[in-house]
Amino acid sequence: MVIKEIKVKNIMTKTNLPVSDFAVNPYVGCTHACKYCYASFMKRFTNHPEPWGEFVDIKSWPEINRPGKYVGKEAFFCSVTDPYQPLEKKYGRARALLEQLLPTGISISISTKSDLILRDLDLIRRFPGAHVSWSINTLDEDFRKEMDRAVSIEWRLSAMKQF
Image (cartoon, rainbow, N blue to C red; front, side, top):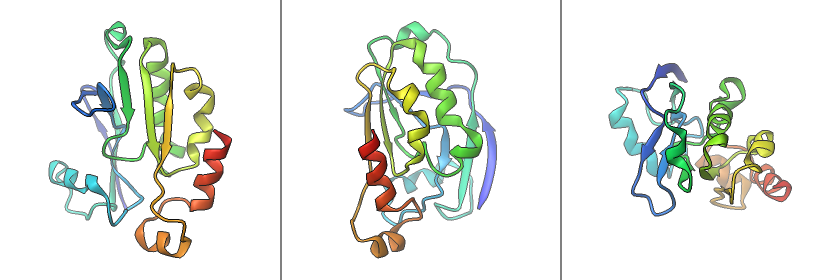
């Protein structure tokens, strides 16, 4: 696994996605290595020779400027990576972004495969109308293990119940 820390100019990306006004991706790449990943097209923008699922760039960004412009808007975590992949435990980039966005008045939607999101439930609850979804492609754990390296289906369902 190749892990690099990178600096970006801005973490907020204006988007035409029907679910949000902004996409936020605190990582580039993902350790889940899902065989069916739609985001693997992003590899061509990374200059990584490694296969998708074998690299992650950890982003750092400047403080969000003009936070008032996000009132009444929605941010989607994450359009091309999982914000709660295992590296989040060490780097805490999703949590840092939630902390920065909390005072802006923005709404959030989060999509993950991880139970690590439970760590941030205290913050997520404070966002107006927050939405959280888990990606579950099967209930067959053996098949899941062939398809991705994310946490077990049981752990995902347990996290859903706790939310």
